[in-house]
Length: 166
Image 1 (cartoon, rainbow, N blue to C red):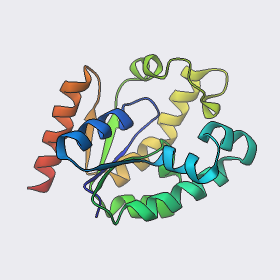
Image 2 (image 1 turned 90 degrees about the vertical axis):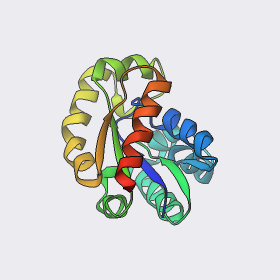
Image 3 (image 1 turned 45 degrees about the vertical axis):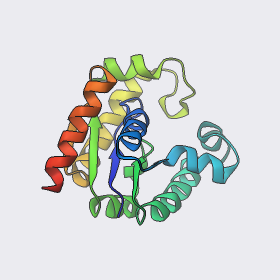
């Protein structure tokens, strides 16, 4: 069983928080976006453009299947919750929903390559939030606000995880 899995919109800090907790706990960190890119042989954004979202989700589910049995911290891609099979796996694990306001997310995303956000990132992000929030709620044991400095956020997340284990 994975130590913890993080879900949430792009830009909420899943990868950065997972990396810090991996260091703190001395365990492996898996970023599903990175693993998907390795298996596909191309970046996730390029996979989306060339093969579509269904191909991405299929690879994502394969990665998730592989990592949940290991003692790892997992940062998932923001859309992993869109498939029923992934939601079933996430519900059975110690899954934490990381979230913060859209203006913070947009600042963190900068000018990255985000095909799912299209031309109007603010509007697209709002739509993704509305669409995915029920799924994040469904699979998560807790929601943690990731606004603020990384060190403070990591402390809040670790405290939430510790109370979850009790």
